[in-house]
Length: 118
Length: 118
DNA sequence: TTCATACATGCACAATGATGCATGCAATTA
DNA sequence: TAATTGCATGCATCATTGTGCATGTATGAA
Image (cartoon, rainbow over all chains, first blue to last red; front, side):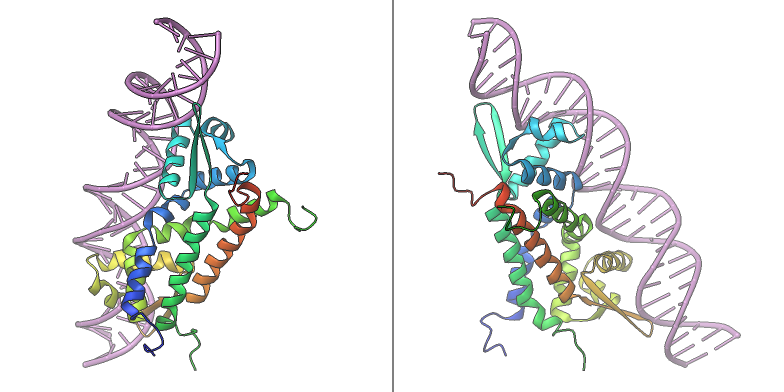
């Protein structure tokens, strides 16, 4: 069985655990940050002022949320004159989720073989 | 353009926001819970005692983490005699991630069209 | 140069969440 | 039935995090 797989179970699991970046998930576990993502999808590249006009939180709060999501590669950032324009880094976002999904698929056969007993 | 798509942008985004369940991500944003997942992948269906032997936290803490992940469909649970056996709900876990990935793909073309300017 | 603007940051406060102990409950076993 | 076992839960504590105000900084405009 392991002759087919190039990785040992524990290698696969270690890779999965590494991929399960807690800061990435933390970023998505905060409703305000999700609202920011929603705004960015609907309005595209925007500066902090535009985003905070749409949300009840203070500009400084929005600023920190944006920085947080930028740090975990969910957002892209471009500085134009005095403005800081954020947008969703779709490529990185999607590839991160794909990577997680791939690692999980790799690990599942061992622990939950199709989950059909008998 | 919308003639091809059956959903309006705001419908797609609303669906995405609904899919971005904060409790699901919160579950994965806690390192101890990830360690529990690792244990379950390596050891398969296990009861609370077995899991907490492997981790420094108290049994009650592990119990609550397991309950939390069960609530968001990451884990399955089966009661055998006095023991409560948890295992990863691979099917639900994977399909949840697939769903999220699908919704994001749906939304990205609007806001970040391939991200290639010019 | 002087002023205004866009944003970051230090700080205090409040809310949330993780933790461990002690206890309670339900169910198996002797 | 009584004792034991596996787990859940109430509670207090501590750490983390979200929040808003006030201030600082850097940059573009007058």
